[in-house]
Image (tube, rainbow, N blue to C red):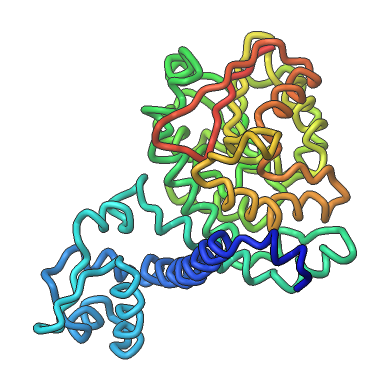
Length: 359
């Protein structure tokens, strides 16, 4: 180290930073173990029983005791689970269970921890993209549609009727009377299925690029006996519908598109003159300096870099990424032809903005 660098080196700042790095290592490890706790339903089991030993917990969960015991070690040292060293009993406090169990939906943060193993599975391939450009297709991401469906149940399905749809004015009354609805990037159609069940007088159409997701949604609708919903696998940048729909929705779908400008123009064309477009998309600014206080900013930039941006670039797309931001989103909506744009937020969802858009 040169004399100049020694003079500039702030030892206190360096020690504070290395402490932060150690926290990141521990929290990163906990993230994986919380995901396992969710997927194995260990949190659900522990929330329903009295403090118990690892054998009892494993038996109740139908899991191998040795693995459960080691997982519990991570949970105890990480401050997730309480431990009585005398009785050798483990306990999930109700204050923690309120954020970790399926019964806690839509507040179950454990659902979101699944994304890190999904993203880590493509690290080597993303590293190649850093060197050579391009991106990865949706099919490269193991469990993507499964985890996306889990996330959607939290942020879309549970609050859909009571919180989300009322943001769009009198749309509930219109759905009850009977209108034509289109959801683009519908995935397995969870939102459409939910609406189709509740509003039998309306007709629902969904388009998504993934044939597997569309098949899953179609099978689900068929099992429920729904006759007012149709899901189709297609590139939503190529739809040619004209003034056909009263209500069009996209749920965290636009920023992933290869041609988001074309998709937004297609939405404008497909919407009736007096129709409403409801766009849920990631909350944030187009300017990184304005995201410094974002509660999950680092997470959103990470999922953007490793997934959202990549699946767009894989198709030679714009690669907007999840953090394209409200400023750019509003500009692109205006470029598509929309003149009436409202941006709304909901307290249950720090991850998304809600755009209520009309011609």
